[in-house]
Image 1 (spheres, one colour):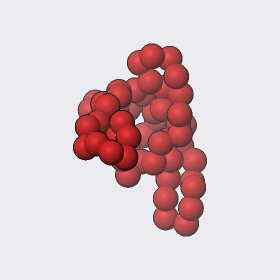
Image 2 (tube, helix red, strand yellow):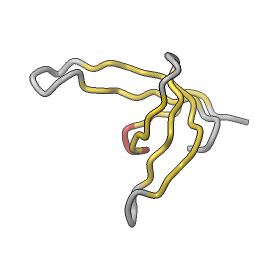
Image 3 (tube, helix red, strand yellow):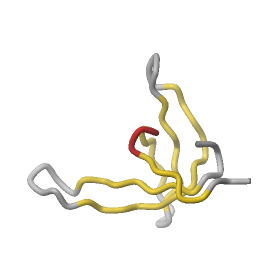
Length: 64
């Protein structure tokens, strides 16, 4: 996973359901969030940005 990769993120709608929202976006930046953990700043299709754990992201298309 690297900057510029197109990623998919499955976001749980709420605690009472197993339904997911699927969002796609591009990785803009990385940040170390713990000793062994990493988060990515993702620019989503709707123009919003959020820090997401890389453990919950799936690469759809790699940046070349």
